[in-house]
Structure formats: C-alpha cells, structure tokens
Image (cartoon, rainbow, N blue to C red; front, side, top):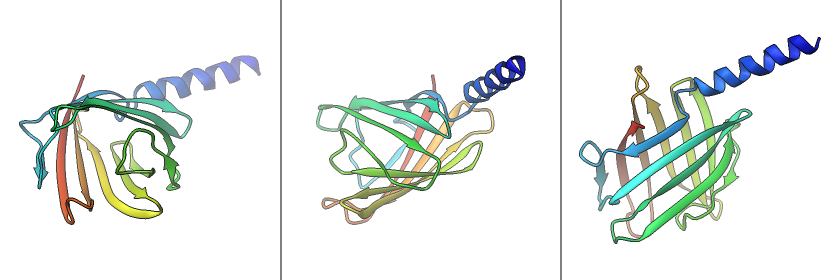
Amino acid sequence: MILLLATLGATAGLRAADDPLMGAWKLNLAQSKYNPGPPPKSSTIRRTPVPNGLHYTNDGVDAGGNAFHTEYTAYFDGKDHPIAGDPGRGSIALTRINSHTVETVNRKDGKVTATGRWVISPDGKAMTMTIRGTTPQDPARTDILVYDKQ
C-alpha cells in the first residue's frame, strides 16, 4: 500500500512538472499588441503548480517606469480567488479548457473587468494571452500578449 501511494504521488508530481502552463515566461514585446496601449516595459510571469491550480507571480516594469509585482494562488474551479498587487483586479477565476488552454475572468469590486484566454503553443515554447476588458481609462481594451518560455 505504501509503495502504491508513493508511486501515485510521484506520478502526480511528474504530471505537474510536465504541465505546459507552468514555469517562467517572459513578455515578447515585439510580438505583443496592446490596444490602446501603452505596453509595459517588461513582464515575467512565473507559475508553479498547486493541487488543481497554480501559484502565479508577475514581476515587471510598467509603461511609466514603475516596478510592479502581482501574485495569487487560484484553482481551476471557475471561482474567484483574490489577487494581490494589482489595483485593476481584485480577483481572478480560472477554468481549464485542456492541457494548453485556460479561460480567465477578472473582477474588481464584484464587477467583471476583463476576460481572457491563455493558450500555450503545441511545442510549449510560447504562450498567447488574449485579454478583453474595460478600465476607467480604457472603456474597450483588447490586448494580445505573447510570452516566451524561459
């Protein structure tokens, strides 16, 4: 019985390590499109697996030259989970569509501010994040962010 549990635990760990969503991702500004803009100067996302979810950090420099740090732990359950460090979002809900695709819903004060889709390329080397939403500054925003796996 102990051997079976150890084997199952090792298999689950391998699956998490092989998950194409996980790891470090660096923003490719040349391939990304921000409408209306401006884009940040840099952004690096790190995702680590947690059971049925992920821990996410995003560190970078915004368009004005200010450093930022966003962090959350969320589960693929479609429920809201709190976000720290992002004045435009208070929570995020994640729904895993398949091994390479996640849909997101961002809320601030209970209102949807953005919806998104993360798609990992078949080779696992690139990720496209399409984000549609509104902010007080941008009533209709569509960003297509391309990240390269590090």
